[in-house]
Length: 310
Figure 1 (cartoon, one colour):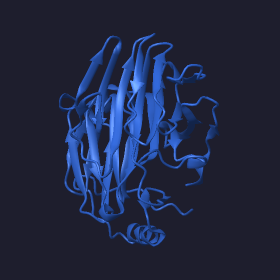
Figure 2 (tube, rainbow, N blue to C red; figure 1 turned 45 degrees about the vertical axis):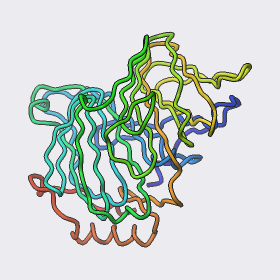
Figure 3 (tube, rainbow, N blue to C red; figure 1 turned 135 degrees about the vertical axis):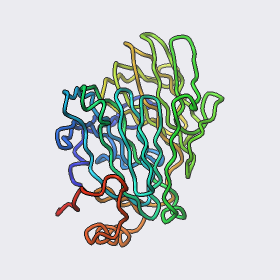
């Protein structure tokens, strides 16, 4: 997992901004991602312990994304798409297509296995795939809970509209609205689109917060007179200082993610697809996967991702 820490991180003099993280590209078997969390200087923002920007990737007819069955423990995976579609299967028997604006929230608990593949119809015609894959750490007392899966269609998520601004609330409470997704700790996650010149205040009711620029360019500053502004382009995460009142202005048309929440209750360790508050639990998960003790994925039993040797 050493590659996940190959990021460019730097302090920023603006009172509102604690850290700037520039995503580093990774190739996941022919599919490009840009990773910001974990980084050398910042492992988590609130409960968010992993944050990948997938694509955009143009997939030719006959080609698609094939993430073979693989395991997770003690976290929740959150898949959110801007373009394309992914077909999710898991060891609970879930078989669900996710489309732009929907949310797949999978709770790993004591252990779950899932696969993510391009649906057959899009694989035949070719398509563009673009989205965010995030992992959320759960409370220690929920790490060994029963696994679960919930799907929230785009129509079920609150949308906040203001002049030049549209915010889809994926989880948490913000702008007077509440999202239906389950969370273990106070969490905010939102997809915000801003027209050029539009402004948006970032909710300040969460101790840890960040904004990630999916496309376009923003100017971000505190609301204290004289506070210098930071500019951030696509592929940049700005980690905000606790308690700072922050306003973002779109230099060009922008899409960005707002993420964060309460700090997790103690240290978390991460290896491959496993997250836990216990190093011993990680070792047990490695052995369980290597020896085939995790459950199979109905409808996708013939393949799997082997345990990495390193």
